[in-house]
Amino acid sequence: MPNPTALNAARRTADLTALADGVPLDVVVIGGGITGVGIALDAASRGLQVALVEKHDLAFGTSRWSSKLVHGGLRYLATGNVGIARRSAIERGILMTRNAPHLVRAMPQLVPLLPSMNRAKRALVRTGFLAGDALRVLAGTPSSTLPRSRRISARRVAEMAPTVQRDGLDGGFLNYDGQLIDDARLVTAVARTAAQHGARILTYVGASDATGTSVRLTDQRSGQSFDVSARTVINAAGVWGGQIESSLKLRPSRGTHLVFDAAAFGNPTAALTIPIPGELNRFVFAMPEQLGRVYLGLTDEDAPGPIPDVPEPSSEEIMFLLDTVNTALGTALQKTDVIGAYAGLRPLIDTGEGRTSDVSRDHAVFESASGVISVVGGKLTEYRFMAEDVLNRAINMRQLPAAECRTRNLPLIGAPTNPGPSTGQGSLPESLVARYGAEAANVMATATCQQPMEPVAEGIDVTRAEFEYAVTHEGALDVDDVVDRRTRIGLVPRDRERVVGVAEEFLAGVG
Image (cartoon, rainbow, N blue to C red):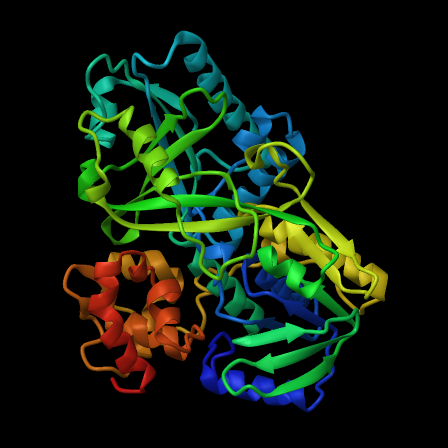
């Protein structure tokens, strides 16, 4: 029997054929980001017949451009939004202890106490971290999963963040939050778990002419179009939601990150957390990441006008991030230290005036005159809650024959209690286990290529077996899917160039 979690070209063809032939559907979800795949998983696990369509690839849009954090809601608590803060802390705990303990780990966040940080600001940060501890307890997340915050010595600060400024360093505050190994990997895991429960996951299929009970689908690879009917159509297209439902009013906000070799920060073991001068409750983060990198972010800029497929960081944002991080470093970083950069657009609800950083991160669900149900706004951390909310409303409005929501306790593929069809064990690279969890053994066991344990390029800890798995099990259909989303090698252009040929080899079916 074929692996029910495996997404690949053959399964896509079979599912497309079934849809064109009129297979009965309860739900069509438009959009293959974290919100869309979350809805597909929730619906399929309730016993509904589900198809998800995405005009590009899984995690093509906003969902791959985040800070890779599963926030506990501390920032929202500081701005008085207790609801989002509490929900974020609860959802973080669910991800870390039940849904995806293999993809989310505790990340140390280090605030160095430097002379530029006055006593009032220090008190504010410490109070905020204590409130975060209270949120963690309220959410039921054990300290063994997320340690409590504390103050540490200057020596310990320098050990965790070796390039921090030493003059006047008075120790630091250490806090913990959730960190994803990768946001696009979470999307892929949710999509494959939805497939495990019977959902049809279709990338490179565009949607148009949507109504509450029908939508026109176009295979972007063949150009063929056909209509499908369903009992409900849900628009989860994020910043592109207005292209599906023109009545939606969104205000995209751009968030930019810079990518560095971890050596530029002395190979830190904590996320250096630096207050933005002149701002009460905003920080930039220099976060240790996979593949020996550090990501520095985050900006929050208005992004009016047409929605680009791939947003670009502005030179002003790049300089803002460098200038801010340099306030805490002993030796300033230069633009030449930047080895990559990326920007994403947040699908914020348009509330009128004010800075985008002040616009609510809450989500909203709308039913348009056409009957399409749209979900906009929200945060990656809350994707499961958002999906449950949307599905509950759709079930009530359309009288769908669905069971109760199960996703609170549903492990994603790769979690210890959902390893998938495991056909082997043995010694496995740490990096492989970090990305695949309990499924790591299957990545190697199913590999048919030559030298599966070999890296795809010197100095990059992604193996040839992982490229093969991206094509055979994770729905990758072209080079960009493999290099830019199933792995994140493509965030650094010089690394990308070295592995494109290897990706082409596997897509051509050559081992």
